[in-house]
Length: 122
Image (cartoon, rainbow, N blue to C red; front, side, top):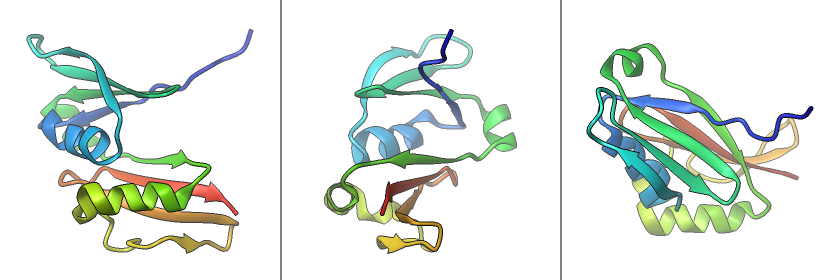
């Protein structure tokens, strides 16, 4: 047996904030949505990456995650973010920087303080 994917749930008081970050800025696609349930949610996807965006004020208050996305072309990812929504760049990591641990990184932060670090091995 092997595990093939890790699929995080990211909780938002307003799922539109997550859609702005992941769909509008990073280019994920909505592949499913359930807006009628007690906890509306979206399944978003980019190639083999899958994330569930769940609208739940209770859990959004309790958990503001930081996740990492690894890329093979950080310059292209950065250019895409600059073009789509540079306002989401994290104030402490607005440019690509080579970190001492050997990764090139920049970061995004949405209005609810979810942080996404884009990284590439150097």
